[in-house]
Length: 129
Image (tube, rainbow, N blue to C red; front, side, top):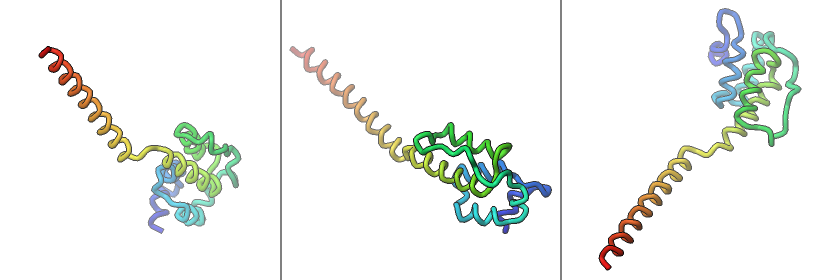
């Protein structure tokens, strides 16, 4: 229950906060179902489903932002939140991890250093002739 209480402020359901937490992955699908089972949350529902679903090929960060914004005006219900969670998980899984970025950076730095060393060695060997 304490998980649900953080989404209610002054008797009002904080739909945008719920949507943002779902979008950043801090709320699981089981937690979504638990949150949506609360009568106060159900009373804040807008619609019964989310009708603007797109195919996965269109799912990117920009689309995720659009789906998050729908919580404010267009749609807010369990179907919407579960769809938002699915889009969020998909877009987060498409991003390379920080480890991959770091490895690519290190390999690039080593390659640049190797090229510089190669140029220096080539210049030194050519000036001696």
